[in-house]
Length: 296
Image (cartoon, rainbow, N blue to C red; front, side):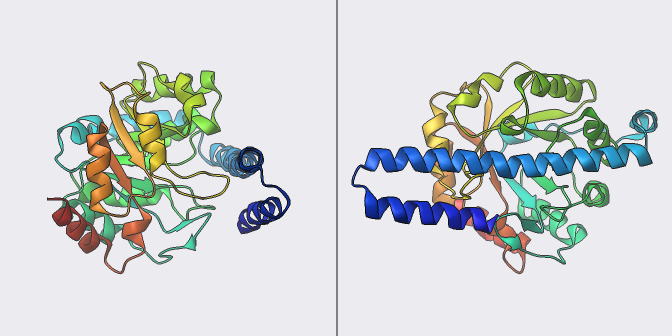
């Protein structure tokens, strides 16, 4: 993936030398970024399909369905964000495709409760193993330790994953518009609701606004371009005016200081997902506590 970033940098360098037409440069960069975004997503989704198929062979969906009755009572992430003074969704993740390992030995039983104690409104836990170093075990292990809602953050492509999320104790799931056809996204959102799971829909651009419907509980704007890995919080501000203001809006990625949160709240956002800013520090819980104090 770092090769992809190098390729884009090289394209930019060559074009700056050979062309003075800035509009042409911008157009070509956007085309290249979109192409790479699709390549990376295709790789992730292909691996996810393989992963889910293997899991189905080990444990059938019928077996998962039998375990639903033992699931914990769900907690509303939507209500938690809407009623919170901070709206911080603190994320637990060990690595990312762009940064590599952030905290390879990070212990969820220590970090996740420290987020809750610091004042997080909700939690996001990465469960993708290959690209983010996560596991469903991270949710199962921490669910009894906290009272605030937990989002299963993963590349959800199959209802099988919704049953998994329910059984381990997740309260909400992430559906990524860029990774799903519209019809499939609607189908998964409806299924999630039937299981008592709330849905956070992630969009990146105006083309994905059509994914928003009554089955969506929260709308997230990802500020990270998955093609270039470039993060621009202004993406949230650009899309804010086109989003339904009666929805719970969440800004994701690139939120590194309290002033950004204040600006986003003024623009209509009620949730602020922060991961790397916290996880790259020695004590993520303390970092969050200091962050929240600076917001006051």
